[in-house]
Length: 78
Image 1 (cartoon, one colour):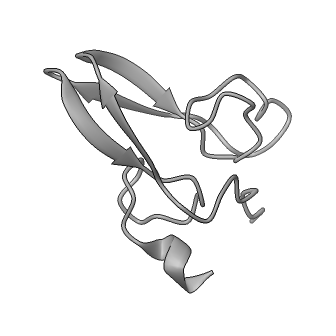
Image 2: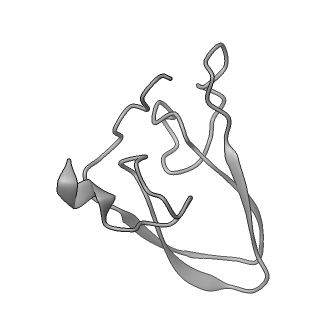
């Protein structure tokens, strides 16, 4: 199994509107933390998540979280 590229060893906190989002799982997107299609040709697929209302979220950039797409502190162990 391939390992994702670590985009950063820290999370990104954003205030997002309600709606669907696609989190980059491969780490290669130039539009972190969101997918830009850079995973094509790899085993990685973007992870869809939906917010029901406007919300502040902390998204993983190290790509090692167990709580996809949210940061679980895994970056501290890298």
